[in-house]
Image 1 (tube, rainbow, N blue to C red):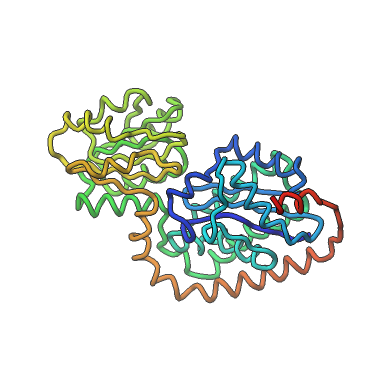
Image 2: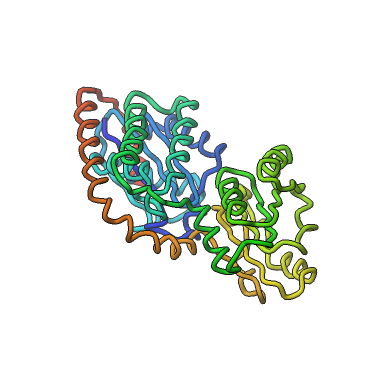
Length: 354
């Protein structure tokens, strides 16, 4: 029962393309059902983060067309007419398992060794399991991936001193303002990434943190933890005059801040610099805002340059990590070989030809 992964990441494509393929949780549930109902995959997990969108699929028959069908499915689901070329990748056993293990360990991440991806991967698996989209094959494979991530953390130094994507955003803020002391920060979107960014900002000395979220209760809870203040999602513009830094990471399908809206708001604050860090996919902030005077806009791909500064000191650990991953991958595949089974999924061959 082969395992195939098809997707795109920050390694293969820019944010402008990744955001077109991004899934919300509701869309993931829908897509998992379609994969099963259309006979494309017996088991599947969909991972959608700011840096990658991937479908992990397992079938009872060894269909070489599965990767191509998954590529077509991704495009059709998001109403994208043409299938991208090299931006979309496909891996089969054993490379697919290798890839999953590398992702779980954070060594395929923008910030080498970061741990945020493990939580995102666990959430993706949890959602697929709740939708009854996983079975013995992917259950065992993903549990092994989580165990390998734990092993790599304990047996190597790949994650020592590592930072998450949200922390890289804080590093960027400090490079603009020198210090976060006396700076007013507004966090839009109280999700996991925004929460980590808010904590990092507070720890680096930000004077105050405002939290705005569609769920006001969630904003109040996070603001209380940070010693900050919650702001209604439709009221954050009224705080604009005092804000120096905005970290935005919502699940909005459209821009939260457009250039036209920002031009009007800037009149309230004179010529003070404004840093806008957009860590959302799809993007929250209109990139044209960067053309305005004293406004600095950085999106998730821009964080790559900062992440690169931390890469060299961790590269020495990569060889040891890969040895551990290869050993555990072979253990897993040997154990899965004892699971025979054939199911005709001829629909895939038909879809692959379309």
